[in-house]
Length: 177
Image (cartoon, rainbow, N blue to C red):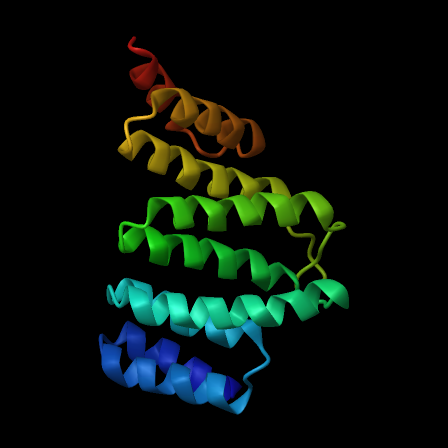
């Protein structure tokens, strides 16, 4: 499975998109319980604007994620990516409420999970992830014309992730000044 996943990434870099997707599918099919393979395939589908395929993939990964949570699986952090990708898929289709719900699930999961580490033992920056989810939520609220909620989410995003340097300017612009 790993071989096919790495081959898919290489093919993607070579601009051989459909060959890449075929390899991502092989990787996922060989190891269907590994969320990371679903995520890689879903990300490729989003980048190809194949939102229905991406959403289907991410929804399948979410089902696996419930088991990851129950067992405190070491790859639980992949579930945050799954929900972020699901949010992107819904956003791409113009389904803003479902997109907001997916990003909200990232925030909820972050609030109930203990500190996490990646496969190499490095701590995962939960604040950075929450900041990105809240940034996306703010962008959706802004696109819907809801300045108040957009500002609220942008403020939370910047509070959680100070590397989002353009956020204060966005807040100022939305606030009218």
